[in-house]
Amino acid sequence: MFITVEGIEGSGKSTLIAGLAGKLQECGLPCLVTREPGGCGLGADLRRILLESARRLDDRAELFLFLADRAQHVAEVIRPALSRGEWVICDRYADSTVAYQGYGRGMDPAMLQSASSAAADGLAPGLTFLLDLPAEEGLRRARLRNLAEGTEASEGRFEAEELAFHERVRTGFLKLAEMEPSRFAVLDARRPPRELLALAMERLGASFPTVLKTC
Image (tube, rainbow, N blue to C red; front, side):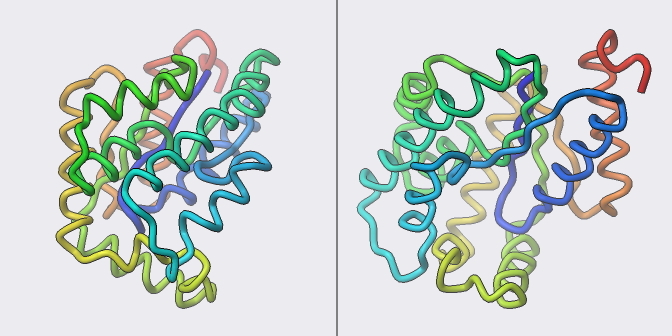
């Protein structure tokens, strides 16, 4: 099973993913947690380039770096794990490309979906959790996190974008969810982490009842 978790900066993706992985492992289900960018060797190098706050990238260069990361990530990490029968939970995937480079940067969403599908060799998630909250709150959380972790310079390029950019990205995610309601589960990221995890597990049980019937 391939699951992705999406959302604007500071939406709590990492917390939810850790909770989901823990629950699946408690159920005896092998689970791989990964991320984009940075889920493979090449991706780790590209992550430094893509997220470094002092880095200035042309929009097209940014896009192709994300797509290169995805192509290698799918080939090297995600498909092999799925072939082994593992659950894969990925922090960001193709929807982030459409939301950030499409709605955020102004590129054509249809072109981005096609390019991302090509990079991923057609691999799409079976379920996507979208953690939604006001852009201003997410940006505040993300900047405080980076400050606490000392990652403002190494991973703060998107947090340095203006609020309007993040509002466009949020709008993009919500539009994507509207277009594919059967794949997306939209969760209010302002709710406590335990509630979000309970809601996510409820949706997982509804989407995969046979597999999760013993959990």
